[in-house]
Image 1 (cartoon, rainbow, N blue to C red):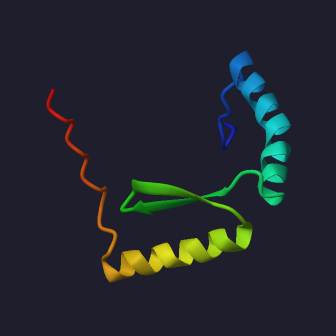
Image 2: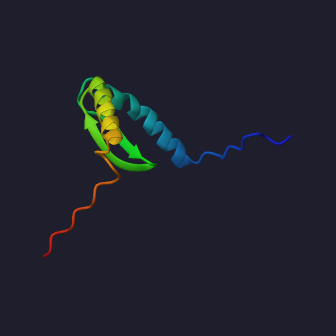
Image 3: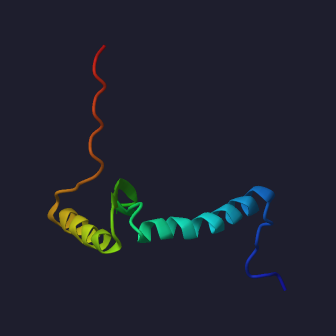
Length: 89
């Protein structure tokens, strides 16, 4: 009987990346908990990334997410903002 799930063998780069992530993750979360860095709040619409805001505090991040949802429902955020034209030289 063939296996239901086929797992690809891990290479060295994948294992090194995993180890670095497992070492760095507790420090990243701790720095966010003590408010040294902010919590990322990402806005996607139709599988397209619109923007990412960084907010200090976990509760504020939740409130900011709720505000962004309201903005999208009201139509104040539609698609990606237009790119600014480079100034002529």
